[in-house]
Image (cartoon, rainbow, N blue to C red; front, side, top):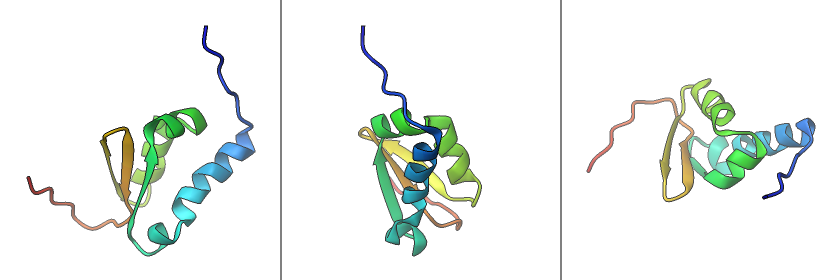
Length: 78
């Protein structure tokens, strides 16, 4: 049976804050985090809520969450 790592609530808040305190995020750029790290530290739903709050965008690809720290329109070209 796998063991679960429980982290302290304050540590989770610091981990989350570090995402949006990154230089790229502050400049309206892009940050990314591994899906497994997000699920371990704060959970997918919490990250989605934090991204949606300021109107940012998030995509998931290849085991990564890519967060576009800009609230402008998003156009995806294929």
